[in-house]
Each structure stands twice: as C-alpha cells, then as structure tokens.
Image (cartoon, rainbow, N blue to C red; front, side, top):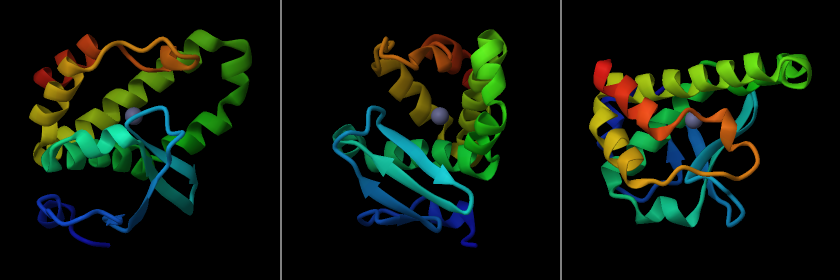
Length: 145
Ligand SMILES: [Zn+2]
C-alpha cells in the first residue's frame, strides 16, 4: 500500500486515492462517502466535493479512509439488529465511528481543514442525518485531539 503521509500532499486530479477508486455520483447526498463492503470498496463524491480546496478534499478523503480501514460499514451491517431494536445504541456506535474517522484524518495533519469545513456546513435533517454527531461536537473533539 502507498505510504499515507507521503501521498496526502498529492495535488493532481484525483481518480485513485491511496489505492481506492474515486467515482463521481450526482446522487451522492454527502460531500463524499465510502461505498461497498470489504474488499470491494470505493469512494463516491458529489458535486460539492469539487468546490473544496485540494487540502480539504484530502481531509474528507482521509476521513473516508478512516471508515474503510476500520471496517465501519461492515460493523454497521453486523449490528443491524441494534439498528432495529436498540436504535439509540446503533446511533451511538455511528457517532463514535464518525469521531474515529475524524481522528484518523486529524492524526495525519488534516484536523484544521475538517474544523473549517464543519464550521461552514449546516446541520442536515435528511433521513439518516441523526447517525452523524453534531458539527459542533465534531469540531470540539478534533480540537481536543
Ligand atoms: Zn464519516
């Protein structure tokens, strides 16, 4: 695998990021999201992704790699019974996964970019948005890291 630290400053057009294919999807609700289950994983980006600065793009891609490396999607699938019968437990796990992915990008030097992005975003209220911690709490956790 490519060395993460040496590649996060790559500034060319992104089609592959640290081994994962990046696909544009006009229906992608988030700026960026990891898709599929191991070992068939890729990253989808929305139009909004291309409005971000190159460093901010890398910050959100590293956040997604944090999810991929920690098998977060697979853990959500394994805990689908929690999603049905203990939704508060499932939501707590999802919030922790978001903070973990933020920490992954922060440890690689991209916490400032994530904080600036979260400060500029508005809280979402689409179905499923409750699985994300508040933007304020994400900023707070990054600053505490
Ligand atoms: Zn995430």
